[in-house]
Length: 489
Image 1: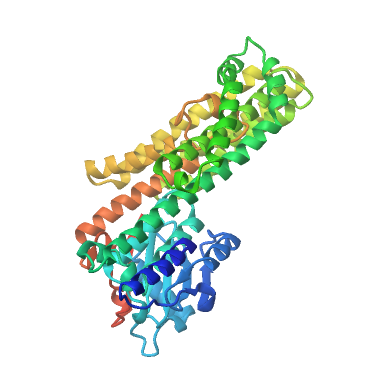
Image 2 (image 1 turned 90 degrees about the vertical axis):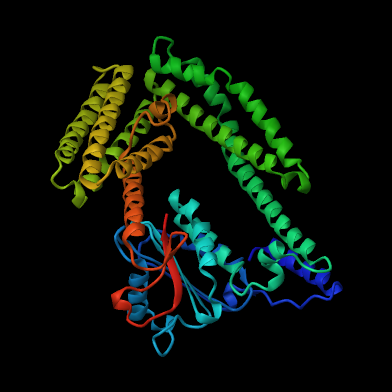
């Protein structure tokens, strides 16, 4: 439970005492119980995780266990988690082997199969709806690939639900209280929303401030580089368009930073402050990308003494994309597809082309603008090959038009949200989704398969489901009946 909630609960206790209310359950830190992290998938950043969980309080002493593994979309997570606990952590299970141990909260994550599960000792059990709420709290971060952040969100959500006292339950607001209790409950929820908004404003200010600091430090270099961009280069012309209002945007960003920093606590609690801070952070990030690209373009196009470093900044994203082809073609689903063989052949050709381009630039037999055009052609061709590969994979996997459309939608969503690489001229001057990387392709295909598998499982599964959450521990679970469920993201 976050600090704002602890303070809110303490104040609410005083208010309820004055109204003849009950006394509070004592908040206890995760450290007062225990923390076990079994990151067998290797996706978590432990320093961040441990620091964040140290700030989360539960209403009662709770052992927090985190278990990650790399599975498949077809896996039954509940069954697999139980099998792991029996083999590796028998202390997570009661002596009679039928339930999860008292005091336990276990959060499981499968980033490959895209499943999340929550499991509870009998004295920490919550309703299926609350289990779904805890799982849902993780999913925005998990879908964005922020595995550590998603785990933190899930533990924080669990801390606010497990052994929650009656005065902190949203249900009391729905049913209404006597003698002013409802007002206290509504006030608690309002405090939570406001505190969350202030945290988002602070985080966006920090992110935007870091970008703005880099932009400020590079201002003179960026302006000089912009002046030296050759006017006859189409890439320089496109960058010059991005730089046209750079100074005006920079000064607006400074003013916006000062304005947001000066907001009062009350003003930072409003939704429009969150949106303003997010825009500030996004705008300064985009400026940071632009100035790096301008400096690299000037160095490369004029063949200054730093041109080789600038060229490396353009080649590195392409090499990264080519390296990503291996994982795509080694996927069993792609083994016999002609499109996989085409991607493999392209990788060899493209790597040879990169060497040829670098040698031509060093020998002076190739103009920088022509080298950039060749890079652009390579990335466009890779995007076309990935589009062909997506159609082949979907045709092999989808069994209905609805499944095909779902997979196409996930692939396109990931393609459009693919982030630009800093210093890349092509990423800076291109439109979102113009180039497709294997990383974005893999994320989109995995999300599409997960969605289809989830739909199929929902249609055919005989296990209990509520709001997309599945209970039961499969045939290997035997008579085990511990509280818990899992769902997909």
